[in-house]
Length: 210
Image 1 (tube, one colour):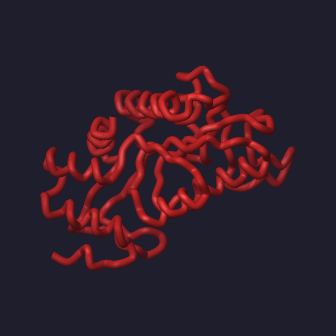
Image 2 (cartoon, rainbow, N blue to C red; image 1 turned 90 degrees about the vertical axis):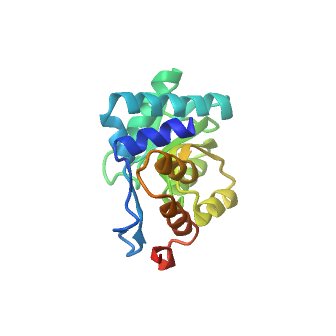
């Protein structure tokens, strides 16, 4: 599964590797990788692979799941498709509560004690994902874990997930993706070292040195 999804993401440039000409994140950090998993929705074959992988993760790792909850906005469409595949209810969590109407932050009928799995598109430092978990828990909802499309495997993200006692299972990850990228000649073998060095210490620009 991990290799298939890695190939899919590379084939549609959902994950774009550019170690020689880094992207600049909003934080100012220079990155050799850019990830936009929203593109998976536009490719029928890739979308099917991704949704099947997410559904399989839930069936295998979270069989007690009673409802699928998406993160706003990137996880909403994936959560809807996966919930349909699994014949489960679906909802999503807003970044903040509405300032009108019923002022909901959790959309969809989800009673206290409901066992849910959160669907996320990308795990980097895990900050926004864990905010969703926090909102659900504060409303008495039991979060079994998280299923995501891709993870960088950054230490900060892993530490945050561990501290919050949240299990995340991703369809693919950076370690697998860079191996596939070398095999498929998207990058040179020496670029693999740069990408993993960046992942392990993103604020240190020494990864750009030859």
